[in-house]
Length: 366
Image (cartoon, rainbow, N blue to C red; front, side, top):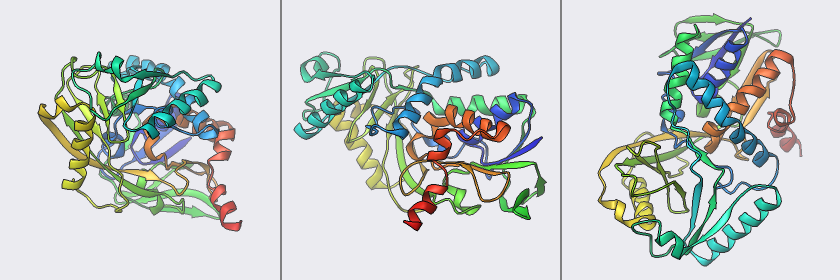
C-alpha cells in the first residue's frame, strides 16, 4: 500500500518511518527541506512535568511518550549511526517568587500522588551548584525523569533513515489540494504534479489548516543560543523567565522561548531577543558574558485547547496528526505508534478518540 504524508517534520517523518518499517510504500511531501521547520527550531525538551501539565489525559499521553523515548532514539541511532543527544538530565524549575515556590511545591505533591518523581531544592543548595544564581531565585523543583534530545540531530537522523530506506522525499514541493472522490481520498495535487496514494496523513504543523479545517494556527517563538562550558550549567533549567537547555556535548546552550500570536510573521525582534537574554540574566547572571551563536524563530502548531489533533477526518483514508504545540518532539514516538495502528489495523486508541477532530464539532454543537 502507498501512503502519502504531507509535512516532513518530526511527526511526519516519525510516522513515515513507522509505516516503512512495516512494509508500506511512503512518499513525504515537504514545502521546504525536510526537518527544517518547527522541528528544527524547537528546544528538544521532553518535559511533561517541568511544563506543569495538569493531571489528566494529556499528561498521561506525554508521560507515556517520554517513557518510550529512550527505546525510540536507541533504535534510530542503531539504524543511522547518528547520536541524537538524548540526555535524561532532569529539569530544574526555579521559583522567582513566593507564589511560584508555592505552586511548584504543590506540583511536586500532586505529581507524587500520581507516582511521578520530583523534589524541592532550596536556594542554598543551588548556590553550591552554580557559579552565579539570579538574586530572586528562592529554590527550585527538580523533575529527574524529564529529559531532552538534540532536535536537530534527531531530525538529521530521521532524514538519513528516510533516504536510506527508500522513503520518497518530495522536497521543495508545494501540496496545494487534497483530491477526493465520493468522500474517499484519491491523491494530492502538488507543484510537481498529482501524487496518488491509498491514504494520506496531514502532518503539516502550523500549515495544516491549508488542507482541511482542523483549527490549527501558528504561535511564533523566538530563540537564541550561546557558548557554554560544563561549569556553567548541569541540566535543563525551565523557568518562567526563560528556559536554558545545555546540549549533552556542552557546545551550545539553547535559550527559549517567546510566544506571540502574530501569524506567520517572519524574523527575530529586539523585544523577543531582549526577553530571552533578560531571562538568561535573571537565572544564571554570569552567562551574559558568553558568546552568542545564533538567533532564530519558528511556528508552533497550536489549537484552541492547546491539544493535538489526531486520527481520521471526514474523508475516508485521509488522516491528520498535527497541533502538538510545544510538545511535538516529545510526542513523536507515541504519535507515530498510534497513527500506524490506526492506519494499519483500524485501531482507534483512547488517545486518538480524545484528540480527534470530533471534539471541535461537539464544542460547536454545545
